[in-house]
Image (tube, rainbow, N blue to C red; front, side):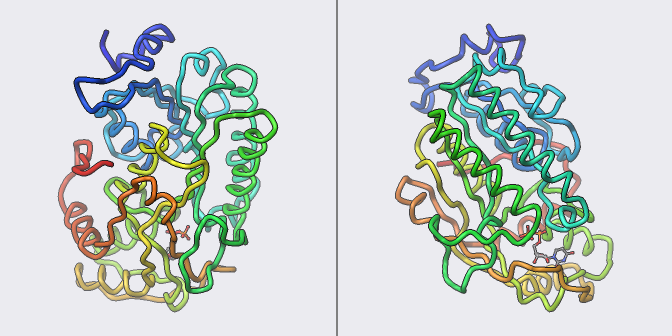
Length: 336
Ligand code: UDP
């Protein structure tokens, strides 16, 4: 059988739960990823494929990354996933979502329709057709809102500060309800900010690829407000590590992932401005801006999640990667 030639439920089934004794020692699984053509989804699908799992991606192609994928993609929304397909699946990783704070302020109903409504429909399909599937929900540190200058653990108060954050928290709480009421096998990953190869830039992209694109275009770096707001950035490979560990049953039911270091946006802007020899301009602050995010991920660490803290070196290497033409999937050297 060609491992990733997804020809229907049977080919998927045959790969299920075969002990991969001759390779890495983990159990081989059939995995569906929603949002699999996006930034994290494409990296994750490729990494799971490299570990010999059988991956099928679902994506509506609303924000595809340029990262070539090594697994099949079915085009559609997460809510269009059919029960028949889920029945033959071991793990469902639900990444598909609208993810930009600024866009959510302009288009809140879009965020509720897609982030909350689609998650609810997916949960219902799982409850009816695949109640024993492992369901992994990709949440976000935005559910915490601003921290008080100390690292934020999973029990930090939840103060979502944007429609995006509220929509992710609502969907997360629906996931927890389905676990508590219907007994679904649910894992919730709260990732802090992520950056890396093939991340979306532009108006609604992440701030780091956006700043680098501005640098490459010799345009000023656009800092919102004074830039003293700070974020905990991890390279995307770290987020992928967390998802892989959750997929393989090595993470607790709710966990934070991040680096444990918070960097001010103005300092990131200065580093990128220096690298590309461009100025910085300040724009209106984002309304209700989250001022401080910093992860306490000791819980994940206890389960073997490796934290890396060399943000500035990784940022530099990402800037260099952006200078070169890109055409191949990005490989990660160190996966947990
Ligand atoms: N930001 C900025 N300039 C931009 C885009 C974003 O200064 O052109 C800031 C934004 O206000 C926030 C930070 O960068 O403080 C991270 O924004 P992003 O949207 O990447 O992530 P999130 O707000 O979800 O943490």
